[in-house]
Length: 380
Image (tube, rainbow, N blue to C red; front, top):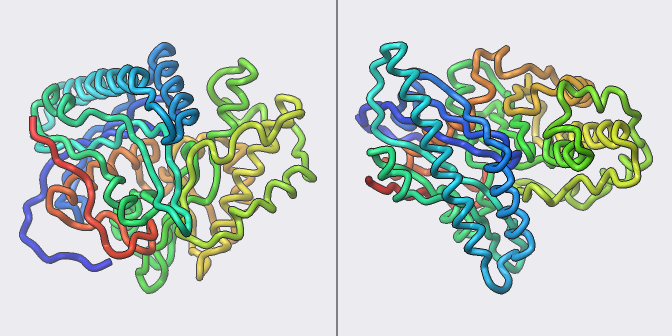
């Protein structure tokens, strides 16, 4: 992963992220040249309203039923795209008001937008993978009034890569600001993924397994909200150890990296037959053990693992991770980072790399055959 020497001036860019947990749109501003982070601007979150979340969930369910076979559920996809555009624009208005209220001079030149993933199929030995993020780049660019970089995964997938994870190059930039040797960044979203910077600066990345996704689904299925608030349900339950042992025999854990998952490759059905609390405890334990299994696949033990994403707010999950990992676990905030904004910041960073035609994925991060550029920049 070589750097490219240029005199490209750093610019202010806003990144947007809406994850598979379908809880909110995150937006964050950074000043970067696509290689170094120079400054951090404001970061905001715009929670989805219940009806908006329902539209995105319906589109996800329709995508899973379709699975690239037969007629596309375009009507539901179009409705979901409208929600994506309207909520992202509202999130941008919030960012803009924060800039104005704080009198921050950060002229935004570009946006990086991930879109809403509704379906992801990893490649096999005989077939390319496929991935689908709902997004309308031209529509959002017109609303924002400046260019939008989007569709970051398609080129990688078309070349035989996993299309995920894409944040590792940004994780590297964050780790370089900290200094030190081998370290890892763990993103706990619907799916967990890890970026490891080895002692020789080699970068490896892959999905480790589920994180919040099955837990959230389990809690919502029981009408107890959208997630296990404070890890209270898991803390009140008992782990079904026999079931956990069976789950950890899944072929996924013997598969070598790089590898990626769809949010529903591991789902709440893993806890079927258990009580609400025991199911939450078992799913939480499974997520932690899946991460530990991923760390065990690394060629060297990191000096520390830095957790970001929504899962770090779950004390039960973090406690189990701390027990399972062979090295210290700290939160993003302990490292001086904004743990809820890192993915949004990452897509701001990737937007500038796309603008400059710099690689955003590599054989060691997605399994692409070579360093790959990606993304499309759409003007207003």
